[in-house]
Amino acid sequence: MAELKDTTREGADTAPATGGNPPATEAAEPPVPTVIAEDLHIVYRVQGGRQKGNAAAALRRILRREPSGRVREVHAVRGVSFIAHRGEAIGLIGSNGSGKSTLLRAIAGLLPAERGRVYTNGQPSLLGVNAALMNDLTGERNVILGGLAMGMSREEIRERYDEIVEFSGINDKGDFITLPMRTYSSGMQARLRFSIAAAKQHDVLMIDEALATGDKKFQKRSEARIRELRATAGTVFLVSHNNRTIEKTCDRVIWLEKGELVMDGPTEPVLKAYAEENAR
Ligand SMILES: Nc1ncnc2c1ncn2[C@@H]1O[C@H](COP(=O)(O)OP(=O)(O)OP(=O)(O)O)[C@@H](O)[C@H]1O
Ligand SMILES: [Mg+2]
Image (cartoon, rainbow, N blue to C red; front, side):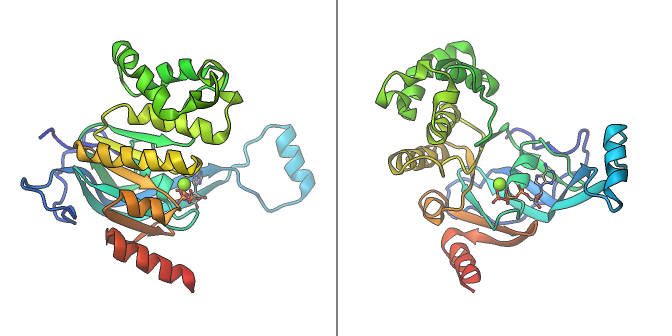
């Protein structure tokens, strides 16, 4: 097994604590941990929130380009701990602003931990609805760009190109793949992003709401692809506000609220508790 890497701090020398939930499915071999979060805290610091004082003073500050001098803190993830294993698909649920996207960004190594650690085994890839594709480039160029950004070689991209385009269904209604991304509907853009990300075998694939904008047919296809990705080794994290998508793709669910972990367990009981809480 490759050594677990600390994505939140360089040069970590302490070993992670073991324990946590075994995967829901019975495996012949012992479960391989892929992501370990240990009492993880993430704090955003926002420069210059609104200050008390009169409008004239504020205007003067803006005109003089003086910094407002105030830093506001948003404590977005508060002491979250879990262990994810190879072969698991984990749904992340919780109300808006509960810290789901923040948690994924921290696992991807894009945000530093205020306290606690994240260890990952393998390279995590975050597929968000805002994943870095270029609106002025054609779909075709974006497939290449996205592939390179994920660490695929040009050769690999060439091999998978037709498959990616076909899976996205972008060309179903005409030759859209040779048009700039900005001419695509938001659903079409999301489909292309998902197709590019799904073409690669990921150690840890994190999908943030990417399925939400696709139509029914594409949702079905991407759910099947997630199950496949999961079956061929990797770990999948899926953020979705659609419980049915979570039900169909995940065997485990982590529920966050106000940055704290409320529940972590098999899909059905967690979704049930979440639904009960929201019915109140
Ligand atoms: N770049 C940022 N700077 C400052 N605060 C942020 C930033 N991004 C998110 N936050 C704050 O962190 C908290 C968690 O946000 P996050 O985006 O992780 O929630 P979420 O669970 O993904 O919500 P949603 O379901 O709406 O996508 C919120 O209070 C949000 O306002
Ligand atoms: Mg989010």
